[in-house]
Length: 246
Image (cartoon, rainbow, N blue to C red):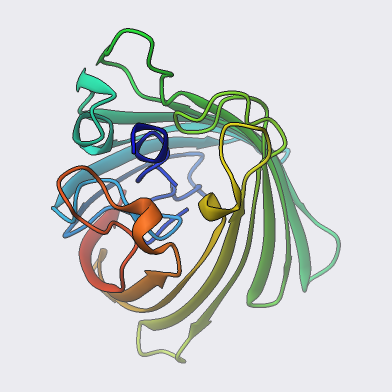
């Protein structure tokens, strides 16, 4: 069970990933409150609310850097840490456009989980590189682990592939979203039971700078991603959030 709980809950995303700045202002900030922090379909907060926020800087040549943070509980819930209440992500990358319909984004992302860990436990800290290609409203993205992956040691080569689509409904301020992802593990510590797929359907609306969102997300992860408290962290659930970028 300990081996399984090490990989519980820190695995792609309902309102999780940082929102990279793409507008005219090079420096932007974002903040959000969500009823459940899902990442790659798995709850990071034992199905409880989370506070999140970040900062991004976009250079005029297409490069960008940023940081993003969220409250979490999965490491303590799994018995891996006695105190690890935050996820702090730092990233850098480059984005560009091939033509008016096709664009790309490549970069490096580090997930940091500061805290007090149980002796002998593998920390949740993770390094990934990623590449994405977008065509019109659809984006395909692949993330590749460079080593330990969310508490799983020697998981270099593990991948997360995702397809995302966002469709704005005219001038209504409403955007519909769809997501499919697959987490695949490499290495000898975990077996095929750790591999799973996730999905999400969402709708969001802008209200004078505040974005209200509702999403239905789920996975086929099953009992493998159940924490010691008996919570199935990948089950189908509805998540509500409010966010603002400024």
